[in-house]
Amino acid sequence: MLYADIRVKEPIDKIAEDWNYLHENVIQKFAGFRPVGDNIYGIRAVNLEKPSDVDGVTGAFNLVKTRRNFEIGPEGVIQVPRTPLGVHINVAGTPHRTEFLFGYWHVNDKDEIIITLPPPEPHLPSYLLIVMGFPREGETDRMAWYCEECTNLVFMREHHTGLVGFNTFWRWERAAVSEYNSDVRNRTCPECGHVNKIGYCAFPARDTPEERQARTLW
Amino acid sequence: MATQAERVPKPILNYVRNLADEMGWRRQGNYAIWCGSRARNELPYVLHEFVDGAVMPVTRIGPEPVLHRIPGGVPHHVSHLFGFWHVADCDAVWLETAHQGSLYYSILLGGVTGRPSRNECLWVGNVILRTPTH
Image 1 (cartoon, each protein chain N blue to C red):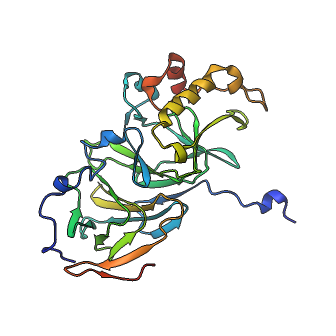
Image 2: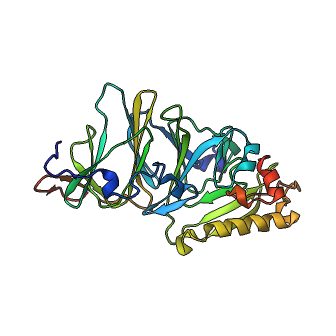
Image 3: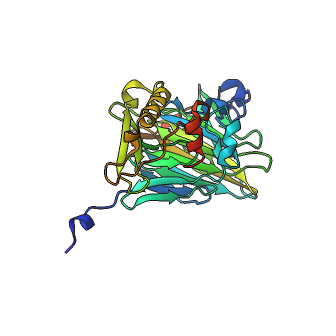
């Protein structure tokens, strides 16, 4: 199809603001999670070699190349691969976690799409793109800890994102992690008695010294 | 005789697509997802949006990939992929990247529970032709 007579006359960046979320001037807006329209977007540059490199990080969400990703199902904890050019859809309700990135299990009521983009050219970074539906009324986000030994649910908190919106999400995350870490009884499995490691937030800059240590462990 | 545990279907924890797979659309859960690729010697797919009565191509300008939101209700068309303009009642996300000489694409349609639920086809020019809503 040719549309020469009705095609826009100006370049796209003159008429459409933020038309490419991966443009170098836009990508920082998605360094955390940002709701736009029907979805919430997160974009991560993969540029850390190992967990200890996070010591120099002041921003959010820098991914470690050697990270592993996990989900929990009927067979317990399973590792899920992130292959280049892969589109992994974490189905709503599946507890999932990325090691060294956030120290809890995220359980949401919306499907979550995770796309792994290899570097388009050698001098460019690889990217991890996260797209998930914006929760509507009655739909929530949960933060949970399951026992490292027996996978029993140890502690959980819920954020009514569909009701109160996304603006309070990070304050809620910080409060829930602090609450979990504040009392060893919160981390002690009621089934097997195992004392689990402390949790940590998605923002390394908010780590306590103990949380920074935990970030290098799980 | 099957035990109760055997009768209960296992939950689907995840499913996986790949940008390198040309497998058409898959509708499951909150999204309908399409993935596709083009070799170096093929015409690239080009996303167009119909905005304010004009056609706006959405293409990579530099080497960086493109992640572009198509708001629900905005007519869009992908050259060399489908020969009409599509309108949905929910957002779509257009992804385009290059890797090792090939181009890779995806459309993620959805995000709202129960949608897409209405789709429309248009033919755009000086006169816009609409099909009945599906």
